[in-house]
Amino acid sequence: MYRGRLKRDLDDWVARGLIDKATAARLLADVDRRRAGFGIGGILSMFAAVLIAASLLMLIAANWEAIPRITKVVGIIALIWIFHGAALLARSRSADRLAAAALVLGSAAFGGAIALIGQLYHLSGDTFSAMLLWFAVTAGSALVFRSGALTVVSGALLLVAFGSGFENLGWEADGHGLWAYWPPFGAAAVLALSRLNGTDRAKHFAYILLVGWIWWILILDRDEAYAFTVAVVATILFLALVAPRSPLEAIHRKLGTSVSFYSLVMALTGFAYVQGNALDVLSTAALGIVILALSIASIALEGRDNGAVRYLAYGAFAAEVLYLSYETIDSILGTSAFFLLSGLVVAVLAFVVVRLEKRFSRSTVEVMS
Image (cartoon, rainbow, N blue to C red):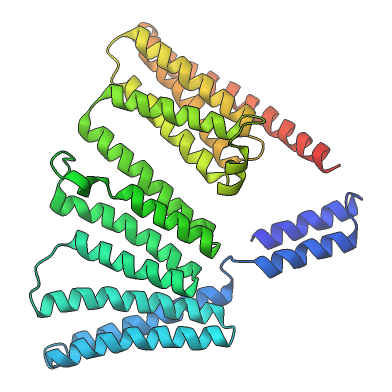
């Protein structure tokens, strides 16, 4: 999809005389050489891997009781080695998609081995510990094989481990000591793997884990002061990343646009949480002004080059205006007036968005020329 859009843009730029055909061809060739997206071949390879794994599981399940215990253990361990050996063979022949599918199956086989050995030998443990072990081994394989597919799997396993931890730890963070504070270390590991293996998509798992972990602590503590502190720190981080000539500009370029997006998510949701728990109209209005100002600042500073930040700011601005309207005007004028005002707000916002999008387009053309 990206290549198709880029090719259409390049053809349009060549037709308009912005670039020459040789430059367009070199740019397209560079994209083809560095492509890490999912093509039809990669998708079919993954589907084949899933179907083969499903057939093996169904065959084993149909004859489960008849299989001796030692055969089960040896078989699952053999599968782990077979899949990783197949990945090495595929890698040596430059069949990267087949290698990725084999590595994913090898990781799945290791997860199955954990469950199987725990079931057969009645080993004590919990899902959380098993998921962390599975993550650690998968992350190690991703590092050894420099596999982008396993990096993504590692990030997904971290999120599953975070969710499964509540089964044993419960929702209360207090009393669990260091067990409640492992997610930042896991997120750091995924970020490091993502950078080493050149898998930008995996970074989102780390950021989502961090945001979820902060909200877990925040919601459990029910402390508005903590939420406000987190929101202020996130706001300072966001502004430091996107402000012109900021000392963190190099870090922003290195980490990518996602770090500013998730910083803004944390800032906006933190302020919204405090605002939702505010008891007086003055505090509600003051926090509303902060959220609106932050939305406008994020569009002005980062909106042109970061679509995710731009649309998040649009949504936050609209939601905040409607919320303030509901809290202040609805009680006075009634529901019909609220809906009328909401429609007017949305219309004005749509007009502003259209103007901003045109301005961003003009700015991009001026920079290219």
